Length: 58
Image (cartoon, rainbow, N blue to C red):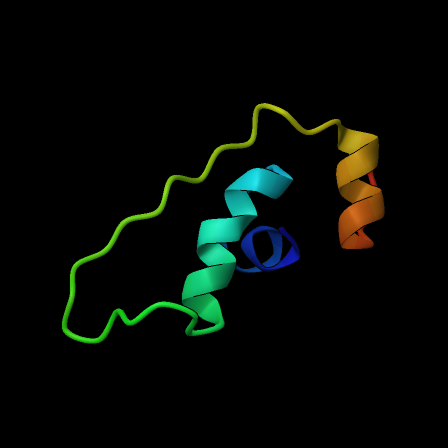
């Protein structure tokens, strides 16, 4: 969640971070493959997001 927010400027929910985390941590083989991961953000409260990612709402 924090990576997506800092690098892509998107606020994603915890469940959506799973696919992104798997790719970033090389938990799945993606070399030479075309891949996609679904990234959604509709199920996260702003205050909870800030707590989980150590960011601050303004």
